[in-house]
Amino acid sequence: MQMTTKTGSPEKLRVGTVVVGAFADGTLPDAAKAVDKASNRRLSAVLKRGDLDAKAGSCVLLHDVPGVAAQRVLLVSLGARDAFGDRAFRDALGGAAKALAGGPAKDAAVTLADVEVPDRSLAWRLQQASRLLADGAYRFDAPRAERPLVRGAGAITLLIAGKVDAEHADAVRRGLATAEGMALAKDLGNLGGNVCTPSHLANVARALGKEFKFKVEVLERAEMEKLGMGSALSVGRASYEPCKFIVMHYRGRETKDKPIVLVGKGLTFDTGGISLKPGDDLDMMKYDMAGAASVLGTMKMVAQLELPLNVVGIVAAVENMPGGNASRPGDVVTSMSGQTIEILNTDAEGRLVLCDALTYAERFEPECVVDIATLTGACVIALGIQTSGLFANDDALAAELLESGADAGDRAWQLPLWDEYQSQLKSNFADMSNLGGRPAGAITAACFLARFTKAYKWAHLDIAGTASVSGDAKGATGRPVPLLSEFLLGRADDVAD
Image (cartoon, rainbow, N blue to C red; front, side, top):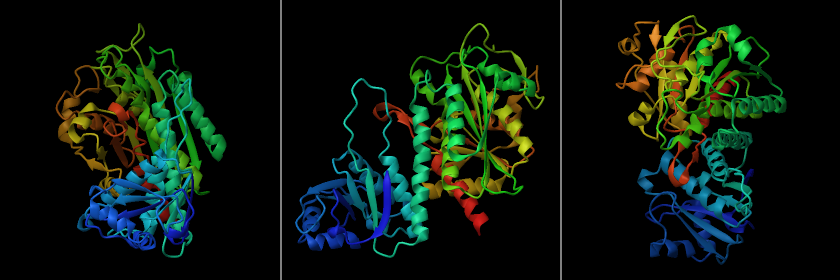
């Protein structure tokens, strides 16, 4: 998508659609006032008739409005004026994005970023607007015999009243880069498990490295065995698809600055193994690599913006299948750390893969490590599909990630990581088991990972509920790329200061 920011009068722009907002009580922001005045109060008449729903994001499309150069005017509800804030602002942009993506107009001018949001700068509003509008235009290029008709605005102007400066242009670049990272994460998630294999993830990482000139290593099974990754390899041993351990090295600073390490769970399909999952919604298990997809998407954002950071992206990619060579409940495996693990359930496999990746991360002497994983159904029960679970062994890192999620509208909620839960992982036959029982399942999974992260500051994002949606809107969401992007952009701003 092409997106620019400019100063201008909305009623004078010759575009397919001009987008303006209105509050539920009929109050019009300045841009909408200008259109209303030029059209002899056409917007006011529409609002007076009650044609626009009060809910933020509701839309009414008006054609051939007198006095307005645009072919169409899209009137978007901003919701109640006294309750207007981050959520209503994003809902309004989301409604506009959906209408523009499904409409015939090839270009549009959007004025919503010029609406004041309490405690938010114009730069923040422009970054949110560019990301949400670009993300709203996302389409998965599904393999079909007949190609669908392409509609939607491919060029958008973000219209503001004041002068456009370098900060505003940079904000739009950041929003677009985040949306492109989300699009990559969505594409990877939406592909079938027969296409998005561990080898495919490795090839995508290599392509990113080639495009943006950063180093990519792909370790094969023999190299993983040599490193002692017995835990991760136990998950993929029954699959015809070879395991891949992918390491991306982005260096934005020619210094010895400690890197930020992102670790993604890459289960390209999860049958549960011998502990076979039920058949209902089993197709959704192609999204079990969403953590890996979010790392790849975030690495693309970082490299595209040339952030002044050193970032290492690790993807542990395997496929969990049943078979004659599959791990069995009761097996004991040895992790790269030397700690032994009794496998009580082969469907608690994500932690078995991540623990070796987290041990591998030690060699970088990292500033911090964040792992991202569709780890537990228990997290979905606890937090639903709205919020990612956050666990951390460092309160400052946790607070930073929580704030980043709030700023990006990609929120997380911190759950406890207390020693009292560790006893649920007790095993009579190994250092630990891979299952803590039904109570506090998301917490005990995080406690398992914590045993492998004592050498550095670490946070774990459980995205089992937020990485994808089911039903008619089935698909990957691209989360938590916005949260991770905001986190790294904040770190980059700190370096620049």
